[in-house]
Amino acid sequence: MKFFDIISNLIPGGFLSEREASALSALDPQKFYVENVRSILNVSSSYALKVCETAVRQGLFEKRIEVYCPDGAVVASAKTEKDLPPIVRCWKEENGLHEEVEIPTASLRKEKFYRLNEASTQPYSRPACRV
Image (cartoon, rainbow, N blue to C red; front, side):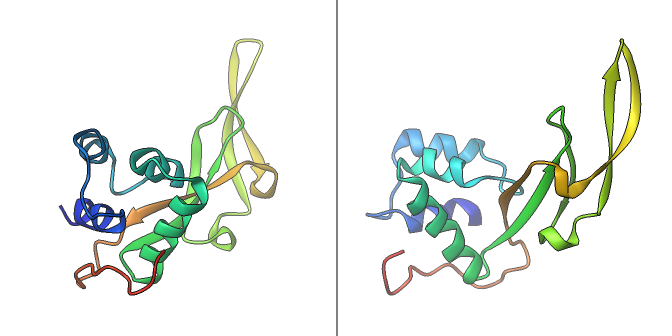
């Protein structure tokens, strides 16, 4: 409910359409991306990023980063890129056989994601200036 309130209060007019509310209820508050927010609110990527970053600054969301193996599997996540392990283990298929390989994290794809800050006890209030 807290997640729903935060997002709905960040949109112009302060209410969600039935489609937006349905899409938001299907979203995992423990892991969502700027693209999820952009799609639900039907806004630009830059505006969705501003919404997420504003919520981070207010302590409502946490920003995190994840790293992907070449096969697309998430292999590690952390608060910051420097907190990621320097080497990760991924599975590689060769000639029908799977083997575990070590790969430097720096060479792999990374993506930022957000999650609801459950520790935040402050109620959401609309910012005094536009996001």
